[in-house]
Image: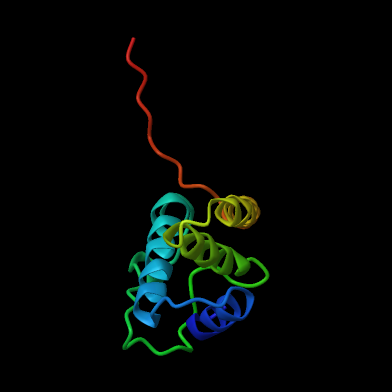
Length: 125
């Protein structure tokens, strides 16, 4: 999914007053998390070594790290962030569960598709 698709879908599913700048910052936060927790721990290309940076000047057509059909993780991430900031605890808990499920599915897919990097471990006797 690209940035604009995620923003549009999140706004359709959960109308809100958050600025585009805040939502893009949230998307940046999630991609940093995915980059550090998943991408760098698996085989990746030299091109993927660079963490993408997003701001309000970034083209809306810019693709995010997670491809479809796992891109809903971004929408659920935004929805739970919006609920948290609006202090809507019950909605937050529901959207958090959807996000965690989507994140786990995406992480499982990543683990199936890419080999983990092998780290040299020394055993001291």
